[in-house]
Image 1 (cartoon, rainbow, N blue to C red):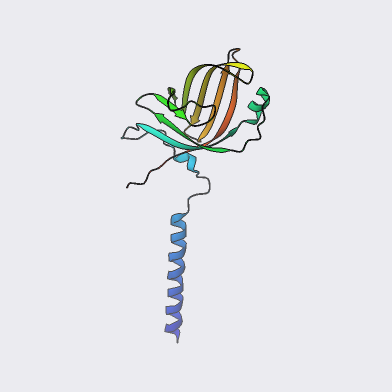
Image 2: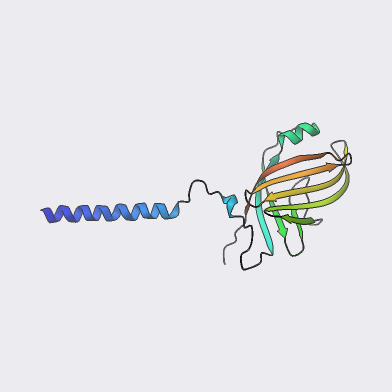
Length: 167
């Protein structure tokens, strides 16, 4: 009878060990976010392009500055950085589009894409558009620069790198 209970307890311990080790293996630490997975360097292989998916919303402070309604819901957008061409773009209504990509500047983990502009928006003359993505945090910001040198953060959000399956 003692051998029976010994086998049952060893079996139960084995099952619990398998369950807990499987759960532990598949869980990520609580402080790790998807945004930390955006590479800051390509290691030994040089990164040619970086494609990201971003959740973007109108920045409340920027909307107040421009006197517009910030009540629009957040939107999902795609952003792409081409390190070989030193350019970048993202999708959106007021965006640096793929057809007219901006010039890329890299400063540490900060990617900055700028494009000169000349159009009227919000009752002012826009002289430049830019967006930045901080690769260490995934933070996205889009700025408009007006002819009076006022720079307004219009859109903010978070980005994560798009990972494609190997097939």
